[in-house]
Length: 152
Image (cartoon, rainbow, N blue to C red):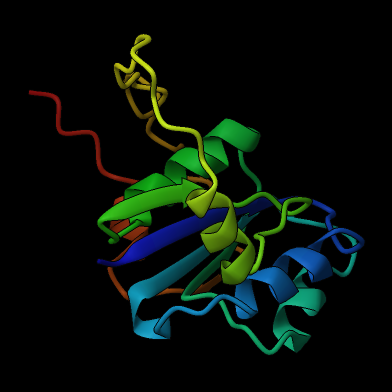
């Protein structure tokens, strides 16, 4: 199962190193993890932090955007994983032994309401064509980010 993690950044040079380190320390086959970074045109050293890290994103785009949700929606459109998640610049992942141990001690459901809820957006917005300042992604990325309006 492939996991896509989307990170939206903007001037995140101070918080980003811990997040990237936690991602690099995960015990998962790298071919099963896709990391997509959408930077809103940072003016600090956010891109330098990413470039100097030992863990490179599969897709890095730096361009002005309409804000956090616009960037996250772009990431969702680019994701190719079976599971898609968001890992923000000031978040970090626990190591896999912590996760495994906490799952072992998770209380059993004792009857209450256990229905799954859809927490995702009801629709995705189309990003305006703003031109890409920096992109290091697969060649079909631009079409996914800025689809042509095909109204009849």
